[in-house]
Image (tube, rainbow, N blue to C red; front, side):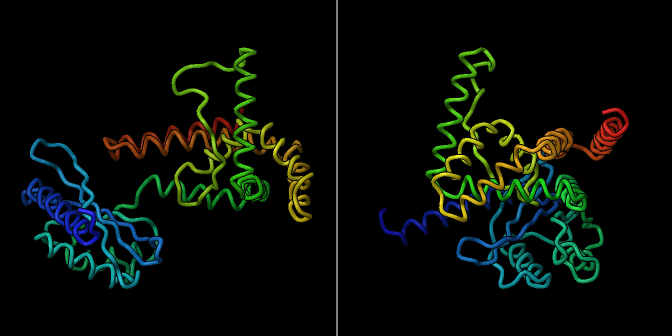
Length: 307
């Protein structure tokens, strides 16, 4: 049992049995495929595959069926890997009724993307771009076109880099924040209870991670005094480059423009976050999703007119 080879064999057997159980559950039903590709820690290209179908009880089920190693991320290579996986599982492309990927050109491209290669063999395999992913991409594209907002997120990235670059600084930040929370609880400025006042970390906002920008801004607002304290420590104890960065950040962070933009984007992204969370619900349907987008647009217009 301690032999790596035996352990891998056991894991492989479990994976095979699990996959066989999923295929038996499908029982020849029509299905959709959800896929995404990325590099693992060893820089190998991997393709994750999820099958979506309706079971015998009428429930929509999504099952993760495996990660395929791909030689390259061209559409032809991805299609070949998908064909091999279908062949291994005894699935037929003729039973495919939907395909969903992100907006990358090799997956979704009109002329030679994976979507088109599959549609050439099965015109009933309709493509659908994830709504939450579309929303995130549109949001980031528009936000970066605005100079003030672009400056805000560049500053936020710099701030996360400077404060979170070392474990020591992260520890100081958490200590300062914990003391601030204890003090606020003592004064009755914060409520106590299960799930409240959890440990907060400063994370990098990522363009493809839904709601990550909103989460980062909320963390900065919650930990603002503690972040300032840490920057003041770096301004004294850091090397020449770190002292310069800390001094610059302190000056910009405590300006009216930064704080105004921070709270404005918190409000805007708060609306987006609600919509994004709603779009990711398992039981979401297309008609309700369209209504949610309309409500979101109405709220934005209201904010423009009288917010």
